Image (cartoon, rainbow, N blue to C red; front, side):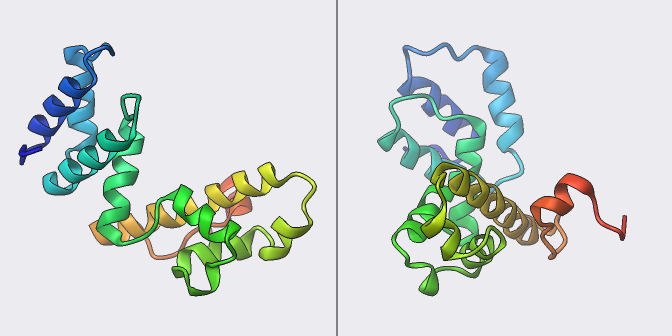
Length: 157
């Protein structure tokens, strides 16, 4: 794709999924919700997603794809694969922290419900990924709240 602006990238996205409805309101929503990201990163993210997705990527999928490239972190699915492969020792700090919050490697090893472990890990990792993206944009404080703090608040609030 040669589009260098977000509207051109969205037009490319619209053209590559002709069977799916993509009305003008949706184009405006995609454009508005991706406007805070650098256009070259959005363009590259859309290109990568189009190459591997059979369905129209959501705004969230595009943001995650672009953001992981911006901050140099794995996507949530790639981070989970690091956990499953037991490769977190050499992985990014955010992956190790998210795994530690949910109980470390033992949580996966001894859990009778690994799908719950996966969901908890992805929630924790996404919070760290969002914080890393926010720090890169200058919009999020450095501290990441844990799941209980997010659910119940902190004493400092």
